[in-house]
Structures are given as structure tokens and as C-alpha cells.
Amino acid sequence: MPELENLKKKFLVNKGEYEKEKLPTLIEKALAYCKVDNESGTVTIENSKLKNADKIKLVLVARFLANKLDAKISASVNANELTVSTGVTDKDVVYARMSELIKQRVCFKKNDGYELYPYQASLVLDKLSLRYNEDQNAK
Image (cartoon, rainbow, N blue to C red; front, side, top):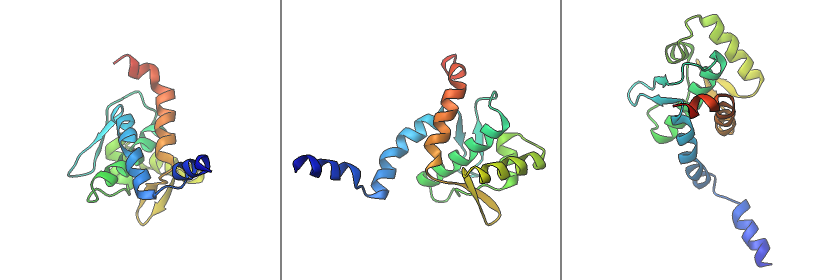
């Protein structure tokens, strides 16, 4: 029975505490690619080799994480903010990528912006790490 009790403690967690435990790891992963302005919430992408779709996903993740650190930074990102943060100037491209990401259940539409599904943060960052790993090792 002690084994079952140990498993119970590991498996049944307080959601808030669990998120706090995971947050530092996610932020460390995100730091390899971007930073967030603490006033405007603008995301600065530091790897110019990222594809447009990856830049957009990264901005969603960065704003999600920034909101966890500072509630005054919205987790929601609108098309204008995506354009500024990603450098993708054609809003039709931004809207097309967002439509794809909604269909893939990476994010959802919220009022006039888009927000990341929380479970996607780790998945997106892990995929970026796999896709661009050689580039990061070269730094």
C-alpha cells in the first residue's frame, strides 16, 4: 500500500503548483529563441532561421509564459502584435497560419486575439528544439 500512496502523491497534483513547477523549464527552453518586452508584451525572436509558422507558435508560447510571470502581459495576441513580433508583414499570411493552428488545436480565438492552449507550450518548444537544434548548438 505505501507504493500506491507514493504513486497517488505523484499522480494527483494541485494544478497551480504543478504549473509553477513546470514554468522554469518552459521559460529556459523559450529563452533559446525569444524574449518578451515587460512593458508592451512584444516578443523579440532571436533566431532568424525560424519559419513563419514556427515564429507565430513561438509568439503564442512566449506570451502565454509571460502572462504566467506577469498578469499585466496578456496571453492573448492579436494579428497586429503577431505581425510586429514575427516580422511577417502580410496579414493574410498571419490569418492563414492562425486558421491552421486553430484547426490543429494549438490555439483558440479569444475576443480579437489568439491564445495558446496551455498543454501546447511544452510540445511547441520541444518541436522547435528538435527542428532547430543544430542552429542552437552553433551559438
